[in-house]
Image 1: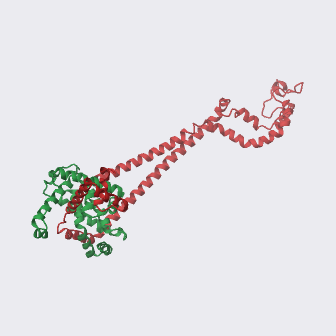
Image 2: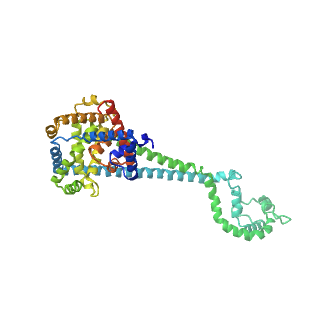
Image 3: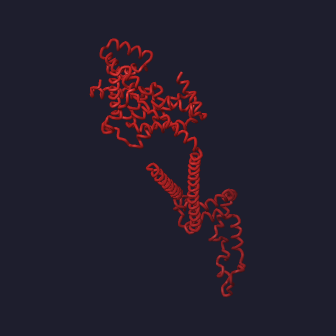
Length: 278
Length: 192
């Protein structure tokens, strides 16, 4: 080992802090290296000089210390009161901070709920207006008012009703009777077609649909809940992008909380800054 | 023997025994004062810091654990008090020695027994002590701290590590660098 690398060990050896293998190694090296031996003597002399540099405390220091201690013992109540007041002030500060945090969070939550409720109302009113336009443009192209009417309708009943309607020549109770017009003129739809076919009503389609009636019936049952969903889907689809609303609410709450803590921090800094300068 | 006695004084002082606490003050006041002196570079400030240290010791007696060494515990409080003082005063570490107190602070009367036994040797030793003290004052605070803890307060490397809250290897390295710097200052000043 080079002497410059062993110098640190020589200093520790002079301090008596080496043990075991390190101690034996350094001792052997010092005995064989004049340079390191001289270094070891220098460190010993320095240690002695340092030990002699101890300062003596003034003679009256102990008396002054004990006088101060007795003062402390005589006035513990005042110090305890100060400690208690300090603790009370600390807990009050914590309580005020907690109340303010809760109020900020509650305010932000109420605002968010109010905004969402308003959005819901807007969506509800605009859905009906928008639905016809939304055909083919919504995410679910199948969800249109036309589809909803078709799905909601009971084909069998419609067919029978239509048949009754077209067979009946009796005027509706609420419809005025124009004596000048023939029944056919007044109710062109009520005219019995010669072929027994009705153009406007897909009566011919009814038999074709009969095989599907059961399926449709079942699917109608199953669709009933879906219908409500499809009715409401435009509402959800028409909402503003969901990502924006929560972020806006959350962002506002975070901003409010952050502003609050910044104010508290500034108040604490100014308070303790004034104390330290005192 | 003295360590055990000091532990007993600590336990009695915890119970409010003023006499036991007085014994502790007398046992450690030189060590605490030396630390304060070399860190503050001023005798008046050193006295104030030493009083503050023992007041803190008195107030903190409830927190003293029996297994801890009284000397290490008290020097921990002293070390923190000295650095609080330095932070409060914002003293520059590179303050030249003689601009601070013109070398007068390191002078102190020789002990009567030293003068009576061998006046010449006492004078030489005192001159050497003053030279070393002046050299220590030129070191940065962290080097002064380890030199005082080791050679004036008599702590081991292990105890120093507890006081400074550092590893023993770190303490050993810092102490070696402090001694090397001190040696260079003394050699340059032809004190040795």
